Image 1 (cartoon, helix red, strand yellow):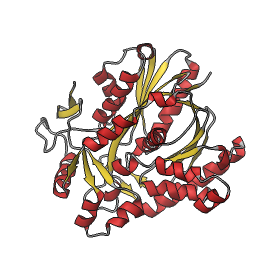
Image 2 (cartoon, one colour; image 1 turned 45 degrees about the horizontal axis):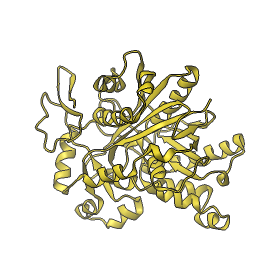
Image 3 (cartoon, rainbow, N blue to C red; image 1 turned 90 degrees about the vertical axis):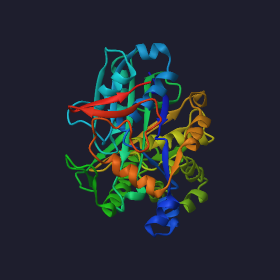
Image 4 (tube, helix red, strand yellow; image 1 turned 45 degrees about the vertical axis):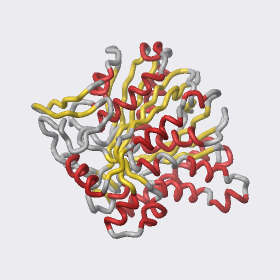
Amino acid sequence: MPIGIDALEIAIPDLYLDMTDLAVARGVDPAKFHIGLGQDQMAVSPASADVVTLAARAAAAVVERADEADIAALGLVVLGSESAVDASKAMAVMVHGLLGLPEGVRAYDIREACYAGTAGLLTAVDYVAAHPGRTALVIASDLARYGLGTGGEPTQGAGAVAMLVRQDPRLLIIDPVSTARTEDVYDFWRPEGESVPRVDGHLSNRCYTAMFARVFAAHREASGLDVEDYAALCFHLPYTKMGRKALAGVLTPEEAEARGLDHLHRRYDESLIYSRRVGNCYTASLFLGLLSLLDHSDLRPGDRLGLFSYGSGAVGELVTATVVEGFDSRRDPAATMTALDARRRLSVKEYEAVLTESLEPVGADISSTLLPDGGPYALIGMVDGVRRYRMP
């Protein structure tokens, strides 16, 4: 029984910062950001656009695309994030309420740094396998924020993706057999009560590339599949240069050309188009790259994709997906590009004010925030610890 992703949609804030502007303001060569990191723009989320509103926007787009019967069959809503807004109540429950989804479902969050969205997807595949005829909604939503003038500042971003998982999917089949590895390491973490993470950047880079090498080697041994068996390899993208380093660790551009596998590096570049303009969105980053690949590459039905997920701390996993006949009818690349182009470009001064405000505690009324988000869902304040949202 093939199970996988039937619909995959994205939501991004309607504000962004150009990386050249940030480089000039910080007194560094713009090439350090555009080439060294591989980033051109950074999505900026105002105080009124939190992880819940972005998740709701992405999920609403999936619900709109889904068949009515698939929503009626919904049995699971799972949200992966490392940007929780409550220490107890699941954000999946909040999204469930905002969208008015069927009552008879399980709803909960998963947390393990940037890996949580993948954990949610695999949980959903297992759920549908155990409950034939049911469907699952998986959401990955995050705000990557490090603070002004920090080393991680140019790798910030924000965004959410949502997926409908069902039998006989019309986008991608997910192979239930994957390869995972776990190692207890402090390369990136955020103690309870702190608004921004702590990062050992050099260690995190080493952990990421080493984890991919180990996972890919284990996957090769377990499955018999190697680089030549894949039409494309997608990566978690905290910044787009990161995945390029990992890919080169198993197949350099020179080796790819000599072996007739240069399509893997070409398609890697195609998977970066959205991420270069959005930046890091933690749990959603892998799927943002997957979306870009599906929207901009010459993939064909039956093509095998390798999806490498990494969550600091650390968990890594390689998931295999197969492109389904008619997959291109399930996506609207023009709409995504239109949304990216329609965003408002911030000055550095505006960006600094928006970021500072978004890191402050939520007040009773933030409807008059500096630059309120224009999306259909927005945070408008918090009273007695209860978050209040504007709905369409």
